[in-house]
Length: 301
Image (cartoon, rainbow, N blue to C red; front, top):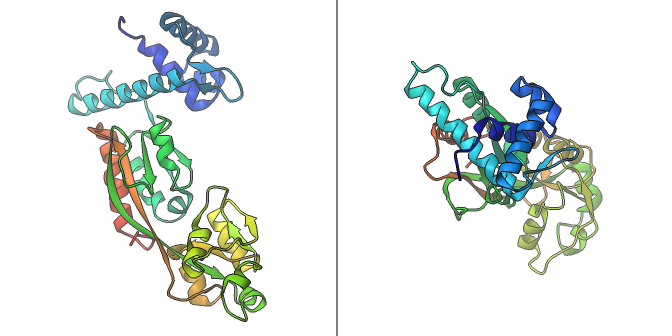
């Protein structure tokens, strides 16, 4: 295959990132027609479809591979611009790094890492949120370049480094405890007391209940996909749930939340996975992530 048209590749990556030809055109400072023409020419040259036109536009499997290639080229150009500052044309296009993070990390310790990275580099971040047991799937599919994940085994082509463990505690309001667990926390009371569950992928409540009741329990569920609202709902007596210990520490100190069974935290090890031989930008992001995971009031254990 002859050399790829990188202007067309950047147009493809922008369409996928922004979700439409119009928004991609604005980020590239060209017309939507120019974006469409570049992408159409690239598809005709390759003989394959790269984007499914819709709202939003989404990449085909081949399109994801070419987007990944375009992102790597942009990172390498940035790296050349750092080591060869006399070449102003190198790395001038601001690139966006797509990463996946679990919601509880984003609500506790990850934002300082993102902010530190943003202060030190010209790159932008596109942070996708998913369950810690599923962020690796987004890395495996090529949807993201790096991820915070509960998966220790490296995804093919990636390195995996331990970040520490996020500690969760089962907690509810005192009034909820009195209403539902006055006779103790056991299989009978857990089967009746409403629980709070983040989303359909959330298994933390089930894992904790298996520790308390090895035979297993199916608890009633409220679905509430927000870490902050999750804690607020628990304080308001809506249900009990598994909360990041660092996030609800003030509520535990004040007594607005109490542990269902004191001394039964659930530790979830977390890992940072990114491509082997990662370019400079990804290495800089990793450094910020490791530092944030070790420091601050919301550091991992």
